[in-house]
Length: 361
Image 1: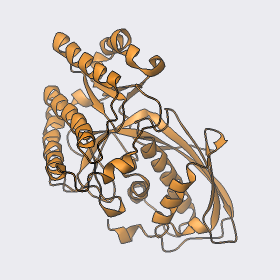
Image 2: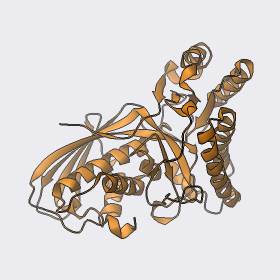
Image 3: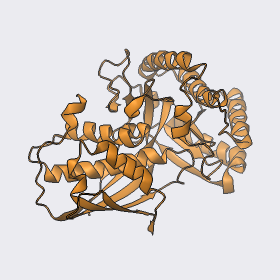
Image 4: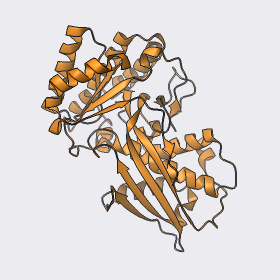
């Protein structure tokens, strides 16, 4: 698909009002995306597990209006939220060429999360993907041409990317690739692509327990962090590393080699934060308890020969990844040794999911 293919050319503007609702999950990258070009194009490819329980639920109500200004109100978890409006305004401006009916309607956006907002669990990914799916459902109602499910998902991912890069990986599951690369000829910079390679049974129903080390807002946003990759002394080497690791991971996912999986995933997590610590200005999103948890995981793995590992997103929280067969033992380990490092003892049990779902109203 090309950018031009996503432009809605003809639609029925006679529909006066309606409402649609979607839930869309967060995702956790195994190979990390950090750094982007203009128009939300990634500097390097990434691949992520789609989650199941960590999601955003968004209802979008639209009502016909006369003026041609963007018009919308945002409600977050029941309360009107002005803080979200600038980001959505920017999003609407970016996607207007592809969703021309945006100026025809007033939108009421009602959204909520099943996890803490802005704490490193990719709330922008689930939020922007849910909103994009709602807009695609409205497009399907208005469009004078039939929209296939494949095109629907591709365009939803394309739109979501323009709101938040990683959001393009939340439309489908279990694994999604984003960014052109030689290992996956069907990959695209424009939208996420559902992983079509072989997946060993070792990775089926893979578990992700998210340890909430810090539920507060990050001191440095991901948007700012991405920009700091411009002129970064190690940027070129990092982008090459991501391509190489994606190729290695393709082989690992097919073979089921969990030891090699652990090496790639943990290295990618630490590399992401190394880029933050070596940018100018430099910053640290990990907390002391983040490091305590990592060391505890390493010690447990050494002692028990478990296949547990960790990854990190752009925040202090720790995603503990492990095969389903180890679930009982790992949860016991978390409760006995790791929960004390979590804010108020809070953590979220999640697992690989299969993408977003429309909710009947």
